[in-house]
Length: 144
Ligand SMILES: [Zn+2]
Image (tube, rainbow, N blue to C red):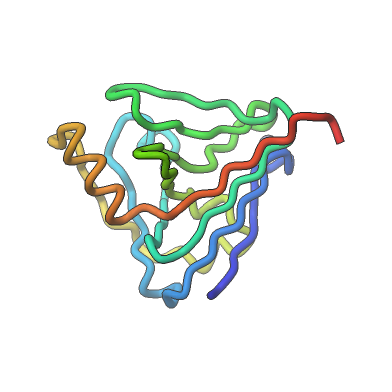
């Protein structure tokens, strides 16, 4: 497994993405929705990998829109968009914004444009179960 660490600009939210896939073989996705185009997101995922997000107390802002099944995670202090999470059947899966990783330049290859606007909710959940990364989502509850 390769291990990529990172986080938001101010450091309140930390990210670890693990994947056995060669970096050049990880598809970089540019989702075409109104949120992702505003942020110019370049996301990566590996369903056989692992994504750990750790937020300091009260640091994370979660934003939902459209179907309302996805938590878009932003830092409430510095405004960085970290990635998106979805909970389904007791399991949490997600994607990470590759720009949040310390080694972000590894993922500078052109992104694949994706348009998911035609999906219904069942289709969206099924696709994400197949392609998104299992997530561990940790929040501090006390000030360190
Ligand atoms: Zn921050």
